[in-house]
Image (tube, rainbow, N blue to C red; front, side, top):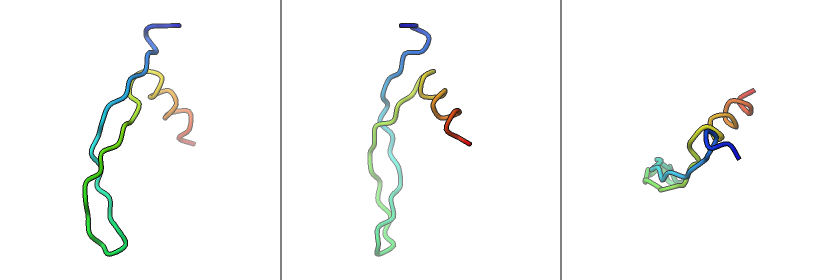
Length: 45
């Protein structure tokens, strides 16, 4: 395994709009790091 491509999780708060139009914040775990950036770039097309 290459240490330069380690992936970690980071909690981020995202706004979510419900069916009634109200906005609330929801926490979600997202992968961050070199491997996550590579995956995002390769799936952008």
